[in-house]
Length: 123
Image (tube, rainbow, N blue to C red):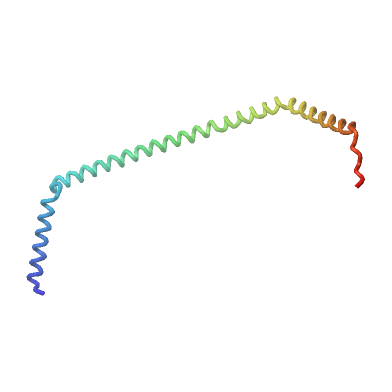
């Protein structure tokens, strides 16, 4: 193969490709660089906004944890006190119900004893 013809073909291909790229490019180099710079600034602003929002979320979580540490023990103690008071208030009812159940059981036993027994089968 002839080297001169090969390099001439490569040079012609490069020239044609470069020409096509310049003619079909959506914007000039200067406009493309300006667009890239704008996108870079926008990305930096977005990153700063995300960082700021993350800081706000961190502070909110910190306040929530502090509030929970203060309020949860108080609520737990309040629930314990209310449960103890409720248990104490129903105790007389529990005792009355237990007495009534015992009385009903005794009545059932008395009825069973007073009823005539069926005759035993002779099998």
